[in-house]
Image (cartoon, rainbow, N blue to C red):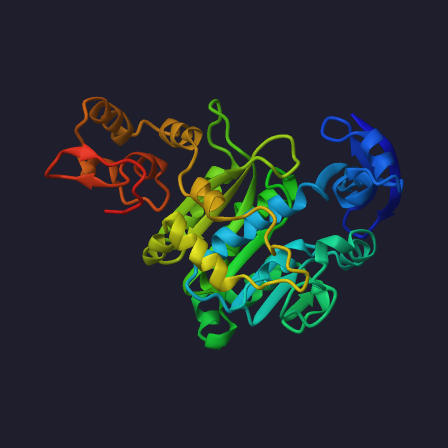
Length: 389
């Protein structure tokens, strides 16, 4: 449970009810250690008070949105896997992201020249600047031009309906003809609400918005979104399944799902990465050494000398590359897929027919998990060698 719970603020904005709290979750932290960190007795706690401070939590309409001890994991996991899958991301869009942490993570990339963030609730953004300044702190980042990420010279922040913003500019091919090349985005990050929310659900299942995302990306463009709680083995068709289907229908050539369970939400959440070009798969499937080199090349250093990334590294990226088994099970359960039954039988017999399993679908966790590298001459599967056939 929570102890030493203190409400910092409650504000009813035009769009939502916002609560900010400080508290200690006794499941993970000790009140005694926190109190000791406030002393000057020379103890480890007093010498490192930043490790024992109270958590900060923001709630939107009663639902936990972000916490001090979970936000780095969540935002680094959301941003960097997608950014590294683009060869040279210069222009990035953020849908939502009012706390400023998604913006902070994007600005860590040296290649980025402009970030456009669109959030409908300007009052919420201002509240986050006041009560959650750590989320948008760029003061230690080499290359940033302001203490707050919102004020960085590369940041463009608009308080508008992000869905309509994209639809107005990119919804149709005809409109796209009037868009300058430099106005397209290399990466679009959707850090909006839980897609099980009734209002957001309508937008997730509206193909007009999905078309605007596709049209708004450059040729090697990457889209990423958190799509809510991870699927369960008993799950069936839901809004997120329809969302994936729509992305395939508009033309995305490759889609990948990964789960992150360390973000402070008490259960794993899933993220969807959609690649406009299948050629980008080779970047998604870099090996750990290649990924580590890219991180060192791309991520800015800090004035303090502390690592700019607290959680994300090559091993984390490696854990994202293959979808969890549950996604394969749900994929195969949605309809009687002949390739699933055939694949499982072939794998059991140590033989394979790639043509049966490779259906050509942009999202195919069966193929991802089981046909990573096939050597026809040997008739065997080389597991965890990330090569698409």
